[in-house]
Amino acid sequence: MIQPKKAKLPQLPILIEAKSAGDFTNANKRWKEEAIKMTYVKATYGNDVVFVLFLCGYFNAAYLGNEAAEGIDWIWEHRSEDLDQLGI
Image (cartoon, rainbow, N blue to C red):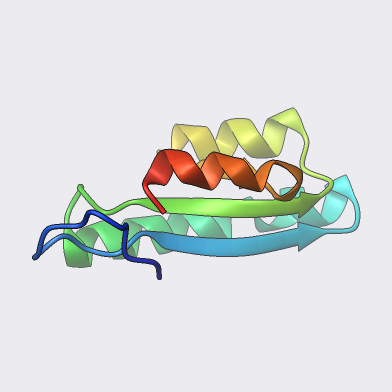
């Protein structure tokens, strides 16, 4: 959880989950975990919550497409400067 620099209370922090996968098979077996987590988080905190994945390793288009369909965005570990777009 990271609070943006210019957050105004009661703004929720940004939720970032770091994910690493050594191969595509492992990542594709796990995509539902984030979808379930996102459902619980939105049910608890509302639709305005920001949840992103910080990805390292092998994540193919199928995995990314499934996450996008659930409203989950991601940032690649080799492009950490993209975190700036979140106001961090």
